[in-house]
Length: 531
Ligand SMILES: Cc1cc2nc3c(=O)[nH]c(=O)nc-3n(C[C@H](O)[C@H](O)[C@H](O)COP(=O)(O)OP(=O)(O)OC[C@H]3O[C@@H](n4cnc5c(N)ncnc54)[C@H](O)[C@@H]3O)c2cc1C
Image (tube, rainbow, N blue to C red):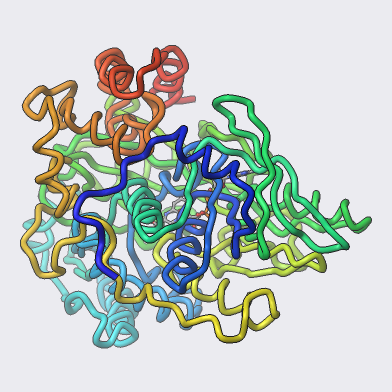
């Protein structure tokens, strides 16, 4: 199927009107993060009629808060989880090929300070290459101290004995989520943000649809579907519980949330185009310093969390851990006042049966698909990198369990270019460089035709980009623009606050309503405040 020459305009009142029309969809998906959007795209390409409902904005949950790695997971290799690593390495290649404007390979260097470190970790990484096979992005190399320094110009030099260089990928997670939404929509799916699933419709003991509330207008409506997928990330248990209660059953929670914190600092702390990887921190974790969109991300942590805040806050120990570990490996230690933004994500880890709520580092990153007695399909866990294979698995399991017809076609997403994707080998600006029109891929021309192309509202954010976000990318608020279409909130929260009034003014013109900034300004404070 070929894409329309110009993208679909995102006229929200038309989308809600379409949602209100009486219709029984083949599939209703609740949750517009990586998982739900992946399922929507896979399903619509198989010819199903699809609706996806997101209570907030696409990728507002965990899917905008990743470390931005498209990776097999060196850490999971150390845990011996070979099948997960092999699958993720395969999916890494699919993702890099299907969205080269948003996901690219990146070199990582692991500096070594003891004679045994380079051979010990290097052998593991050579195995990573072997597992990747044809999907490999480049051979692992052993580096001497001079080459290690050339790759990581600010690496701590005291006792530096060399390093190991290997290849993985990196991406812009929130823009990829939007691209999935837009690709699914371009092929006929109805995807709507700011529409919350407030309950499930049950008929004769089977789930038959979703009670929905448009959170902008408060309007409530019912959306009917033959199959309902709960892809709400760390929030899946709330819907599972409702489903259980409707049938008089108790549904045990399956998610063990784990928090990960990232700090963003200027590129001068790690210039160049290599990421730094610490395989074992003082307390046995993995830490990355990753050049991303012109800044450097430091992270992350893995802290069990019981509450499910929309904007989780970091703990003081997590900040101290990231700063002190970074100080061990960088010549100039980042200080609290150097942090441009701090953001936190919740991993939807699937509980092992014997989970005692303690150590989440040991919980598998594999996904789970659970189908309840009513037919509610819940999918959670996994990684951004494997969103596509997770979606394929969900639909295949729906077919196996009779929720989808046996003659449903197979998945088409493995080699399917997403909206805006250039040819995989076309030259493009690396993701680690400052953001700009290159992130729009083949849609760059359309962006450049919009008014305000040369009018900059913030570093690397033009007025035209805000218009593009409103017209084609479902943006409704200042936060939508500055957190997920453009990533300024994640890169430099103070600059995002400064840009808010100008962004609101352009958005107001585009949407024809007043656009407030107060809530966004409060949010920027949270991204600037270290406990
Ligand atoms: C700190 C951290 C670092 C990570 N780094 C990486 C990485 O580098 N690489 C990688 O591959 N993976 C990484 N991951 C994992 C990856 O980010 C997640 O696996 C993935 O984003 C989960 O996506 P999801 O769609 O399941 O959940 P989410 O993105 O949270 O999506 C669920 C959505 O459901 C919506 N929702 C909830 N309730 C309702 C309702 N009632 N009605 C409608 N919508 C609802 C939410 O608003 C949310 O948008 C990381 C995760 C964390 C936390």
